[in-house]
Image (tube, rainbow, N blue to C red; front, top):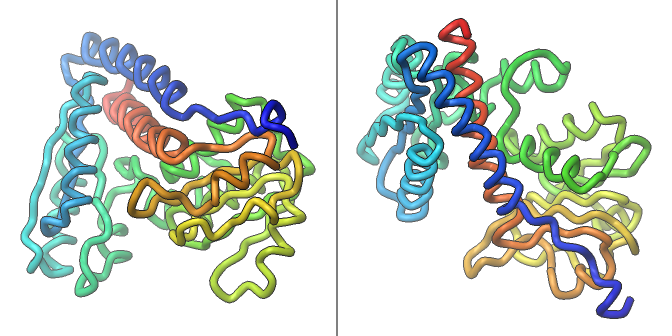
Length: 285
């Protein structure tokens, strides 16, 4: 392909900005009607620098969207029982409408037990069994934020997954697995690949849609991208590097997400949007 034929960038920053602006308008209406602003509680265990920065970013975005942010900082020595207790208290608090447990939480904590302590109606990050089930069956609930943001990006750029082959590289409970289910719900034929997949390159070469979500820098090479494929890079590695070798992939794909500026902004926008939705449901509006 010539440079003029290089892939079009999927601008997650611009779309996320519009979603947050719309979310802010919805939050203002909700606050005006009920006298209560939507509230997102963020829970952070320990002081991992990346997690601290990410939580601070979410708090800043909350303010811009008219959402109250309540932050709960717990020491790195917090036990599973203590974390579960904190999350159950927040779940029972009528002043909190959404709960985000920043992960990772530390190897000594049972992360799944912690996630399951979040009430489904407040699971605006879409991490519980209940959220995965409702998402998979197309029932009312909350989607995992990054997968939900990916689907919104596909919609924005007119990509209809129906009948297309989608390859998801990664099988995490909050990214790989749920994005595959969302694509399946849109009638894509979905293949999951992972660390034990034999001949990953062969699987990727068959894909009309590639979602890279494995956390390994530049794992997906341009030479393995089917000409004209849509490439979603949901990876983020040190040095602003994704899971896709962007420079080579951009010459073969039709659409591709940059890192940063692609999937990342959509994750936070989806979180804020779902927080306002959760608040409206809980306040009966």
